[in-house]
Amino acid sequence: MEKGLILVSVIIPAYNTEKYISKCLNSLVSQSLKDIEIIVIDDGSTDKTPDIIKEYANKDNRIRVITQTNQKQGAARNRGLEIAQGEYVTFVDADDWVSEEYLENMYNAILQNKVNMAAASMTRDKTDKIKPHLNLKEKAVYNNAAEIIKAIDNHYETVGKLYKRELIKDLKFQEGVYYEDGGYTIRAIYACASAVTVPEAVYHYVSNPHSTVKQRTGGNLLRDKVTTSLDLINFAEEHNIKIKDWVIYKERHFLWAIKHYKYYKDYYIFGIKILRVNQEFDDRRVYAD
Image (cartoon, helix red, strand yellow):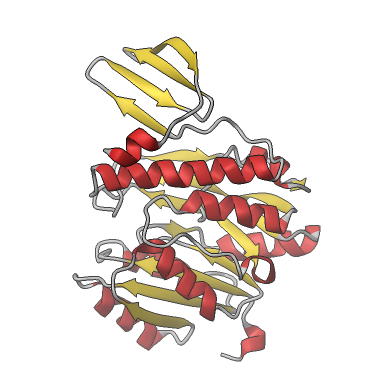
C-alpha cells in the first residue's frame, strides 16, 4: 500500500488473546473504509496469538505485525504510534471489535465537521448480553477539552476514538504500568481541542475475564491505579479543564467501603453513603504498602 493512501492507522496491542483476536481482526479487515493499515503489536504472547496474527497478515497486506517482549499495553501502543502512517489513528484492544462502518462513520464525521477527533458509542459485551457503555445520543460538535469530556461522560478509554495523528503522534503512553489510558486520553483530547460525537459508530468492549488487569491483584495494581488517576486529575487542574470528580481508588471491606477522591473521601455502608470527610488525598500510605 502506498503511504498516501492510508487514511487511518489502527493500533492493536495483543497479549494472549487467542480466543478473541480473530473476531477483532475480522471486524477490521471488513471495514467499509478500505484505505487503512492495521498495526498489531504482539506483546510477548505465549499462546497461539502470534500464529493467528501472522495468518491474517499473510492474507491481507494492510496488516503489519510487530513482535516485542512483554512490556504492557503502553509500550505496545507507543511502538504502534512510532510507525503509524495514517492521517488519523485509532486504538482497538485485541479482545474487542467494532461495527462494520465504524472507521468510515468517524472519518467522514471529522471531515464534514472540520474537527480533529471523533468519539464513538461503546457497548459492554458479555457472554449473555450487550449493555450500553457510552450511549451517545446525537452527532454534535464540541470545541474545547472540557466540552468533549462532558460529551463522552468522562470516558477516558483510549479506544472508541479517532484522532488526527499529527496532533497526538508525539504524546506517549506511560510504560510499565496498568491503567495507562486516562492520562494519555485527556492529553489527546486537549491536543485535538475539537471533536464530533458519532452515535452510529459502535465500539464493542468485550468483558474478558482473562484480561491483563483482571488477572492481576495486589500492591502494584493499586499503586498504578493511584498514580495514573492522580496524573489525569493533575493534568486537568493544570490546564483548567473542568472534569467530573474522579475516584482515585475504592477501598472495600466486608460491610463498608471508602471512595477516595483528591480532596475528600466518602464512606459507604451496604452501598449507602453515610459520611464525607474533606481531606486531601495522601498517596504515601498506598506506596508504602
